[in-house]
Image 1 (cartoon, helix red, strand yellow):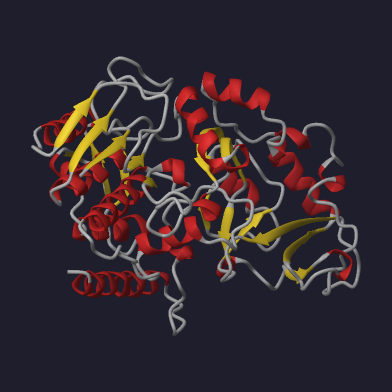
Image 2 (cartoon, helix red, strand yellow):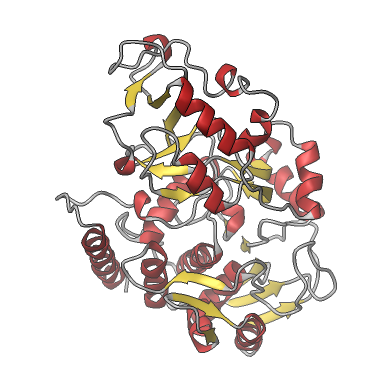
Length: 435
C-alpha cells in the first residue's frame, strides 16, 4: 500500500516519517524548488519561515510539554532541532539552514520515501495526507474547496485574543447577556468614561505589526476582518456603538449601565478559555498585552492566543475532522499541519505525527490511537475536532486547553509542573495500551 503526503513542511515530514517507519511506502510531494510560496525561499524541507524558535524547552510549559510528548511519539522534527540547536536561553532555537538540511537528508535517505518535486493541483487518489500549510497554492486550495465545500475553507485568519477564565478578575467582571437574553453567556468587563478614554487613546496609538505584501492583498478582499484599532480610529465613540456597546447591560456593582463594555465569549465547552468579542487586531503582541490589560478585569489576564490578521488557509476542522485528523466523509484522506487549525511550528509537526501514525495503523489493520485529553497533543486534537466550537479559529498549544486539575494549586509553576507530569504519565500509559 502506498500513501501520498502532500507538502514537505514540518507536518508533512513528520507524517511521512511515521508512515515510512511503519513500513508504508510514501510518495512525498513538494513543489520546491520548482515553485516557492510568497513566504518561502529555501529549497530544503521543513523550512522555518518566521522565527527560528520552537518555543520553551522546560517541560512545565505548554510548548515544552508538547515537545516531550512528540519525542515519546518518535518525532523527527524535535530530534533534528536538538541536533542543530543554537543558544536561546530557555527556548529550543535552531540554525534554520542546518535544521532544514538535516530533516531533508533524513527524509530523502529513508528507503520507504519517494520524493516527487511537483506542484499538485488536484487531490491525489488513494490514501493521502494533505499538509500544504497556511499558504496552500491557489490551484490546490481550489481542489480542497471542491472536496469540502466553499463554506469550510478560510483564506484569512482574523482572530481576537483568547484568555484563560481563571485569570479574569471577577471583582470587576461579571456574567450577563444583553437584556437578560441567554444564560449569562458572556463575561462583561465594564468601563466608566475615564477608563474607556484611557483605553481608547492607547489603542489608537499602539504599534501595529507590519503586514507582508501577500497579507495586504488578502486583507483588501476580506470584508469581515476590520481590526479593532482601525475601527477605533473612525471616531472616539465608534467602539461604544459597536463591539463595546453597553446597551442592555447593568453592572451589578453599581446598578447602572456602564459607559462601555468589553464582552468575552466562551471559546470551549469547558469554559476555561474566552475570546474578546470584536477584537480582531493587528497590533504587535506586546502592544496587545499592554493595551488590553487596561480593560477592567483583564489587568492580569493570561493571553494564550494573541489576535492575528494574516493570510492563512485553514479548514473548518470541527465540522470535518475527527480527533485522528481524518476526514470524516472520506476516510482515505487525512489533513495535518496549520491547514487543520493548529497554530505554530511544533503544533503543526505534532499533528503530522498523529496523522501519519494513525493512517499507518489503519493500513496495518490496527485501531487508531486516541490520545488522552490531559496530554497536550490530545487536547489539540480534541480542540480541532470539537463540534461545539463555533466560529473556529486556529489555536496553538497552551495550558488553558487542558482539563483542570482535581485540586486547585495557586502556585502557577507548581500547577503547571503537576499538569505536565499528569500529561506525560497519561501518554505513556496510553502508548502501552496501543502497542
